[in-house]
Amino acid sequence: MAYAPLSTYMNAGGDGSILGQFVEKEFGRTFEFSTAASTPFEGFDVLVWTRDDSYRYARVLKTVAYLVIDEGLDGEPVVEKWDIKRHQLYERTGA
Image (tube, rainbow, N blue to C red; front, side):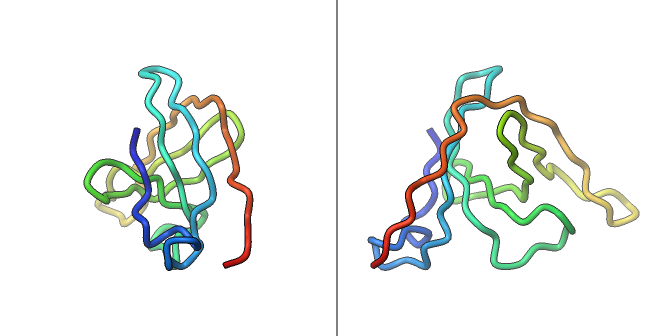
């Protein structure tokens, strides 16, 4: 499982940007995702967290996620499509 850093959680003194989690279908790995404060790629306003507090800009839908894996020579994002399952949004609670 790739957890988001504590800085994304409200109850840990973070900014509350955490949104939820999903399971990538092919390999069965769970990933958490949060809102990106800013993004260099229009429409990719979510961060999918990977190991060691790394992330990929993404667009996460109910059954599919589009992750930016690179930037082309023209500055456009190179995107990889992941089929996902168990898309879950976390309950938003106050601090």
